[in-house]
Length: 228
Image (cartoon, rainbow, N blue to C red; front, side, top):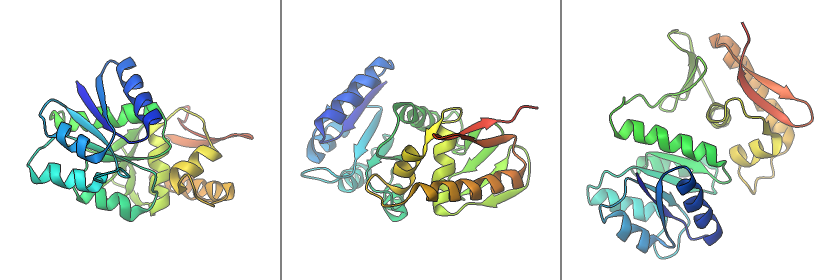
């Protein structure tokens, strides 16, 4: 599988190429939007990881031109922006998924696997699962697998839940969560994390899923399955 990384920040681009190669993928980089567009349209890549803030052509324009040419290659957007409208714009423009900087490599690998499963027809179900907790990106609802009870999440609750689900079993610090959900340059305080974790815990309990968000003293939180 061959992946194209369109990212103008040289250090990040090279790190992504190196990490993807270590994971067994073929990977190459492009340093601006025009080069990325030309390579993406060449027919030699299976997936594009596309930064939004690029010289020459921004990521939205690159994505638009790819889709105008009827090219169905999967695209994962990278953005430093945390606003919901930016993500909606990207998804409406034809992106298959997005990641907000900074992110963990394991999360990127998980997104790649998920996007490629859908692309290869292993199932069109885009829901995210963590244990028996099911998160629906379309409706922003959570439920317990095979159960009817559902509850809708607010925008930040959804982003928080998605981050936990994609990193189940990993301890996430308050700093990591703040940067991921509120953005790298956000002035949000760590107290925001505690408040929204409390909201999310209550909704997980409401649907009856056998997972919990456990507090890790002086560090942060971890999503894990409850012991039966």
